[in-house]
Image (cartoon, rainbow, N blue to C red; front, side):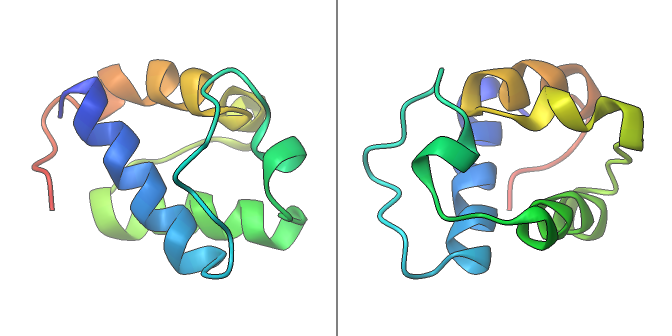
Length: 86
């Protein structure tokens, strides 16, 4: 997947986890927690959705790499190179 496709996939996952949040103005460099009302369970849901939808494993020590849109896309790009966009 290309970075733009990964970004769209993350927005889709966030939309499922936080359906009442406005995701149109997400800032790439700002933490998801600072922009959205996500708690630790929501964050784990993101990790589980990545595993379920794309078979991407994110070890617990790598969770800080999923802090913002920019860091998430950067982290996932090499992991999702062979994933097909859904």
